[in-house]
Length: 135
Image (cartoon, rainbow, N blue to C red; front, top):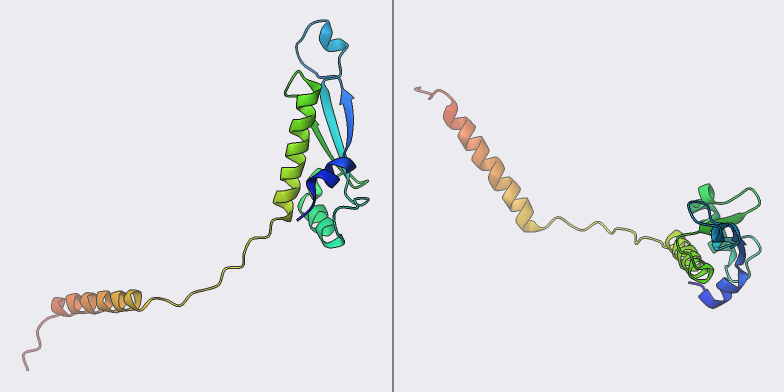
């Protein structure tokens, strides 16, 4: 598919201040991570992969062609960076995953016979409801 190590080198990271409750410390530390990845300029992905990603992730990509993810789950910037990397790689893998085309199979003989038998039984049941022919 693609080399993860080479792809990670193309990611750009920026530390930003986390929002939410905290003390004086939260106003000084940039523990939230913003990961940006320019899909068009990627050397790891081929042209076909870029087209598929741009199509499938169009709602998450900016007008400039950047895929941006933010992670502020943890109080540690390093842990947030790892979480953002894992999420981005997972997102790209799911976008590039192609489902197998379903090959229609032949209807089994047992299923056909079962259907015909049921039709025959139902036909006989309805025939028994009719008035007898006395001629």
